[in-house]
Length: 88
Image (cartoon, rainbow, N blue to C red; front, top):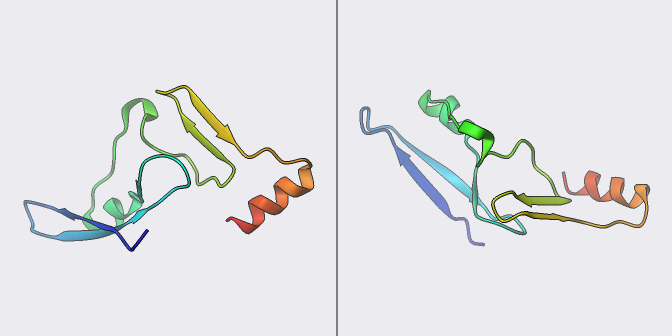
């Protein structure tokens, strides 16, 4: 994907924040929301934790609404550890 961005504008102050859009292997495009706090002074609220990832994962993908859990199947614990280290 070619460097896609989204611009968030605070209508009260006019301050703008340009955020990079991330492309996962599976699923919808992603934004890193920690920039809201750092740059604009806002915090995000996601009741029920329905659209917030708790971590970045190179080995799993989950979509609760669709009942989908995808993961990389490795033949050994060592192979899994190597995959996790090199995709961080």
